[in-house]
Length: 128
Picture 1: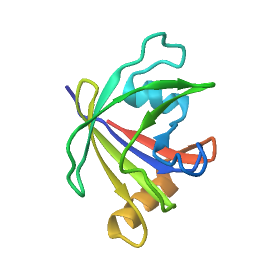
Picture 2: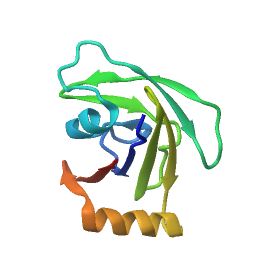
Picture 3: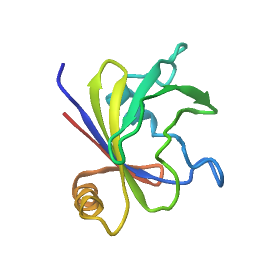
Picture 4: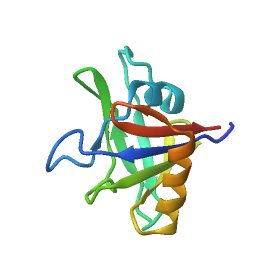
């Protein structure tokens, strides 16, 4: 299996107190996670935060109004923040959350500034 990566701005789309409920654009669900917008069944994803290292989380993809939502434990405040996620198996992903002033944030921000698709007030890029 070829590994894919996702870079995506984290926003406050779910509102205060629900920052860990991440709602990627429909194209991200299809291109990166392989979940169609009109899917009647949705997978449970295995998520592992890499820094700081965490125990795997099992998170069900949930239908939320017009889109899907996933709970990502490390997606807490503050913002701005960038999510980097790598597919490591079927429905299995490892992820990092980068924030300023880290060099990882600066690098990913530069990549998104130059290569990202910009939809729904969020920049994102699928690589691979």
